[in-house]
Length: 332
Image (cartoon, rainbow, N blue to C red):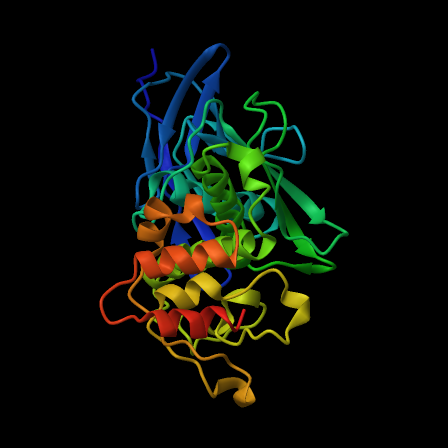
């Protein structure tokens, strides 16, 4: 009788900014007829299943975890078929739709299980459903949060698109869009009345908050991967959108950015961008807040600039004055 064999291997992924990295938290499912065994990759991308097989079996990556799953469109489960063998599976996700699924997975996995600097994680009754569309949205959308309202596990909570017209979006763009959309879910859940109360919050507050969370978590991710100045005020790289210069180039004249602004980034960072970008940058003398403290302390009470102004003044850190808060908010 053949000896027993533990399925094992490693999952690598080519990030378009930093090159080859290892994927953590990926579910590997193995099967022979009606026998199944699963494993989860560690921080080095390695996996090893407790179960064993005496004969050849199938490998598959299932892009899901206990709290979320990635769909291949509106309903289908995103997965990646592996070999049939009694052997080790070393996976290298180089490009294509699987890299897209992996990028969405990375963002969701970080938000649910990784370091998010003290921010709230989404609460789930059923799994969060993230639809990953292998196409362009045709509506100038990179992502969309449909609202955490059904909790049935049937309809999509979040939608992410792979392409911007004919351009395939970079892996950090996809990662950061996933973070942005999940930030909307945690914001919705923070509100006492959930979705219906969330609808009363101004668009500029809603989107500027998600931009700041997107900036913070994506910057953490890519600094950990070796880009030390990622997300800093002087960081620039092609096709980075709002993460260019940590969005310090925002000003009220950029009408096509509405309602996405640098508001909450400016509240928490320690950089005053005045005078930059041909003199169009705003004056930012506010610092010392953190996104985690804003979220846990008073974000649920903020509906517009009047309530934000009040809460910032009530909770201002040492060294920040009411006049500086007024100066900053008046520019938005």
